[in-house]
Image 1: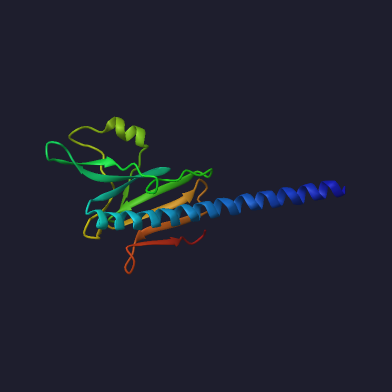
Image 2: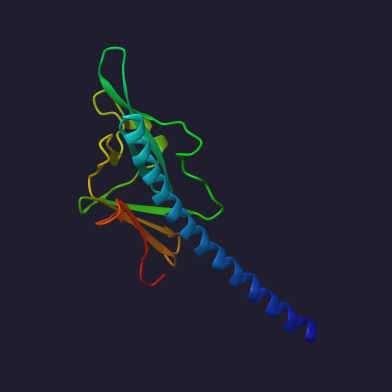
Length: 168
């Protein structure tokens, strides 16, 4: 009888620890996303180049505007150890609104397949070399069940603000 009670209590603690880890992971992902966006904005100013970020249902990648040999500009995925999405063991979902309009997010592999020379992949949000971030955005980050939810958005005082959404 005692072993059964202890087993039930240990099971409840393990389940409770797992939920806290999901919440912490989602919070950390939201904070990291906000900080990386701040870093991209700073890097754009210091390098005098334009950076961007494009979201997918469960990830994102950063872009840089480069010049081609023909003198044209095009967006390319920015390969960098710091400016990249950190995959976790918790499935993270992203929802993005740009200037108040929801964006339909697709997986990167699908977007690459559908991209053309006339319609290449471009970032959803751009970090300009003059320090501006455009357009206005709201990125909701949550776990699969929607129990833990955060928002990374355009701020009034700070360029990027991270807040926990109510009900989380």
